[in-house]
Image (cartoon, rainbow, N blue to C red):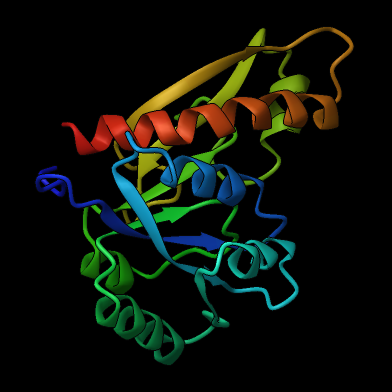
Length: 192
């Protein structure tokens, strides 16, 4: 991907909608010496996102946009370009980005998804995995393209589904793996 030059870390924006547990994990990762990224901005489509507190705690610039119009997406693009953002990590970001937005950052947008793609794109992945009596589920980091959860897979982690698992217990097990997978996938992507 050739984004990494010398010892310069890649200026990265994290997009969130909710609690920000993957954001918290990525901030911790970005502070490691071996990390290829620095987090320059946190963007949310939800002004009540609990994850926005991590921006304040870690003194990272934050912005909230509604993403409901092409005008607001253009504002986001301008903001990202103004701050020299070279990588975007979607971490529990519950909005679908437009083709135009994706074109502006082609090959530089990652997403983490709570299933072993290509299985169970979209929402309710844990319910689907349990209902279908799958033995395994997991999480996937992939490049974002214009089709939902269909971009090139960078890395995955498997989680065994037990007979007693509920969608909630499975979600918790997978989230633990997401926090490990996202940093590994970023390193893998940037060393391609």
